[in-house]
Amino acid sequence: MAKRRIGKIITRPGLGYGDSDIEIPIAQDLLKVEGIPQRDAEVSYYSREFPLESFALEHSASAEWAQTERSEHTPATEELYRDYQKKMAPWIEKIKRSGDKTPKPPVDIGDHTEDIRDKARQLGYGEIGFTKFDRRYVYQSRKEFVRTDLPNAICLAYEQGYVETQDMPSYVSEIAQGDAYMSQAELSLKLVEFINEMGFSAQISGPAWHFGPMIPMFVEAGLGQLGVNGQLLSPHFGSRARLQVIITNAPIKYDSAEDYGIYKFCELCQVCFMRCPGKAIQAQRVWFRGVEKNKLIAKRCRPVMARYSGCGICMKVCPIQKYGMKPVMEHYVETGEVLGKGTDDLESYELENKGYFRSGKVPVFDRDFFDMPEGRLEHNLLEKLRSDLNDSTSLDDKYEHKLLLEFKDRLDTSSENKGKVVDMGMDMEF
Image 1 (cartoon, rainbow, N blue to C red):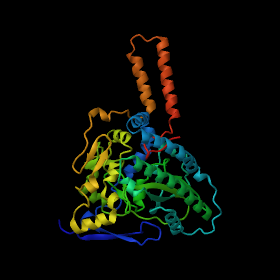
Image 2 (cartoon, helix red, strand yellow):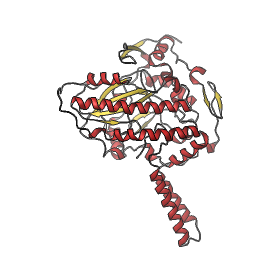
Image 3 (cartoon, rainbow, N blue to C red):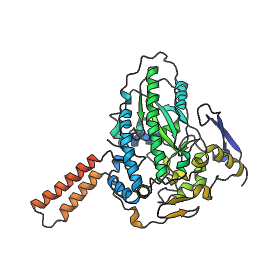
């Protein structure tokens, strides 16, 4: 294919603290939109009339199911999740209290953008950006926790281990994800302490306990664009970025959304869509809650995640994750082609007890593989009780009492298990 004309060159800081800047050439024919197509009034409408809620709460019915399936198919991963939960729980409590700290009196009330950016890079964050904290993306159950006097968002991307990520899905890749979250927790508390020392308040969202979706703010802060796989594709590590937001009243200057060419590039690539073992990614974009995006089909995704160590194949096979945005965009400018597309180097993966799948080959599952409970667990339990009561032709008081006790026991158990890890990437709700 023909060489492409460069439309613009984006300069970004190097990967590590002190590294030289990098330049990313974006082909003219890939330029489409800065950030992501959205209808702002619609985003506000859905936020107001249909507030967002944590997936871990809205789809809690699948929690016990996923744990059972994981114990059967990948018991080592289930044990890893249990250990991760024990280690992560104290950090989450510290994160939840991060906004309670009283800062020192401010010495300098001027702009602190570069002070915070420099400190974050020293701590080990690879991508840092600043934007307005968008309260339309706060979960309904979090609204009482999120401070209303902190208008600014610091967007922080931390790199998950590269080598382990290329082995997805696997036990070692899940270790890498858990390790990244543990590091994020520690580093974000250090950054909040730094901000408090300057004389300003701050509150942390993530890891494992988030105010709400973060990608919209990362896009607005110029740290990447939304990919077909539903993940942020960032310059240095693509979808391998683990995300956090710190809100603050420290004076900062906002960054702006960029057109990295991802909108058009993903249309040409489509590797994650083609390689998804559960066929959970929709090829065509749709308008959803005021945003144009590729929707994920949860009931096609979670059954694979539960049985195959969190899956993550859509992350693994993304060329921007595998090679980095700069090499991928340079290759496209020179050739008009997607780097790695159609090769085993990028597209191959292995599923335990299923085998090795080269480029062009995907696993086949029976239809009942995707059967799982959906929605909230308490709603499912209530429907089961109603069904049991209706199905009984000779309901006596003793049997009715038995059904009610079973319902109460299951409800109590679900409450006790509320903080259990469903999938490594989901919030722990306790």
